[in-house]
Amino acid sequence: MTNKPGDMSCEEFQAQLADLIGSGEDISQHPHLMQCPRCRALLADLQTIAEAARQLLPAEPPEDDLWDRIESAIQSEEGSDSKP
Ligand SMILES: [Zn+2]
Image (cartoon, rainbow, N blue to C red; front, side, top):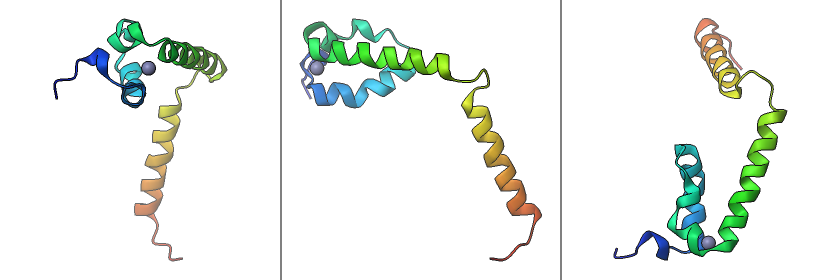
């Protein structure tokens, strides 16, 4: 438990990468990235993909669509007494 953040392995860092990106923090300042060119390259790739995906996505956020489908699924479950 005495590990400094910069001492983490690439595996450990990459396991946290999605959370770090999702948190909105400036992860380019992460200590592991300072000493690890491989993870810097990985992050650059991910950001390129994320940027491309953002441009491909429709204006409507996918979460709303997903929630609509969940809601209507719940409602149809409650509203009908259909048996298989
Ligand atoms: Zn690394």
